Image (cartoon, rainbow, N blue to C red; front, side, top):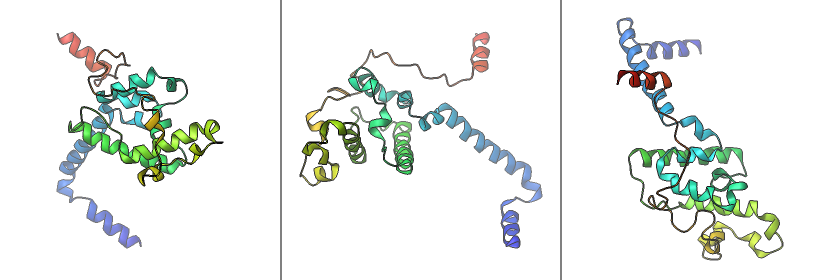
Length: 199
């Protein structure tokens, strides 16, 4: 076993005359990766704070329409759009959805009107039932599910409650004067001060 580990370490470690060059290249890539994590405010996605959803500017209409809705007082973005029944499922959903969002927004492939995907519809339907269970547990509505909807046997909650909580219009230009929290500056304070003194 030890000889196998030693072989692996010997395979990974570059020859003595390449150690400096390889260390610099690895350091460069690690530095770029850390910079991307910092600029994208990546740690914020581990939280449930709604402000994380507007790190990418295109979510501003969704944020401001939620903020002016009745759901603002009782639910965050993740309460509706992320699974709440299982911690592992929640993390997996956040990771896969976040990766898709990152790819789309980084390469500027976002549509003018953002539409919820099938996986998201299933989660939102589950969370509608979860949160409003006390109101509908004596009715047939408690049995409404995305699976039945996908087989044409039922409607989803928002087929009737269409404007809850984001209103009717969600295009990028639908809330041009919305006041939303400012994004954190990308540059650190000392670098901002340096550039200001240079002017």
